[in-house]
Image (cartoon, rainbow, N blue to C red; front, side, top):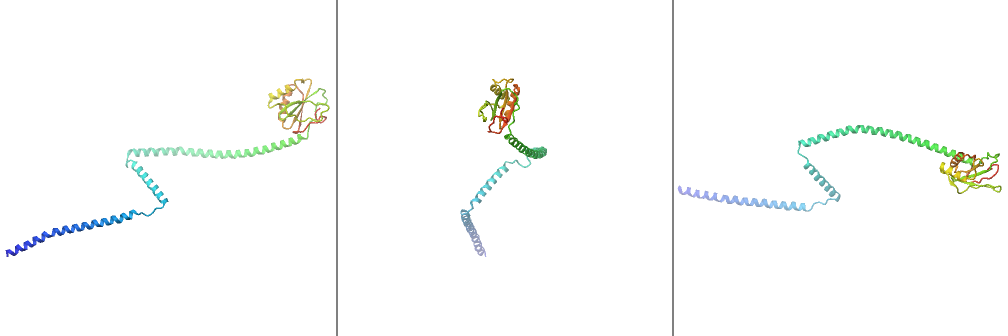
Length: 268
């Protein structure tokens, strides 16, 4: 009886001695399987990542832009102070107050700008009306000048010195230049002279008259002034100088380039 118990104890101890070896082998096998599975997954996913699908160039550019914008935004977020920062709250409040002040200042400026725009529009309308009026007046002046030229081109004033026995000093005004001419019994026509003294103002007109009539005193001579078209404005200055110097003058207009014919209808 005691022998049987010893044998059973030996078998039980041998069985218990073989169990840890089986567990160790099972653990090694399972670990090796896990490692092989992991290696297989790494190889498969590595191949899939090594050959990415081609991306169009435009999408690549957009992707780079988005990545760059994301990086900038992240930098901005990182630069922000933590939530609840008193300094940030103070800066935000000051900024909002400044914005409110600017809005309050902007409203009257907008009203002023609208008022000025309305005034500019009114002024533009008035200016346009004035321009139309000026154009109308210019047209009327042009028509009046044309009428004066047409009437002057066919008219030569008869001298009012027909009964005056004083000798005549003949002055010719053509192209704004004053000169002295002489007419004899053999003179058939008096052509517009090409030279003379410039009478651009009152002083030059007086100086020219004094120089040309140095040998013809005012009490002894009378003045016949022949004026060709284009010099009528200058003739007014010459007439004023003659009257100032004491001469009796008789201006006679003629069309541009037309000769004077001495006689009852022309130079006396």
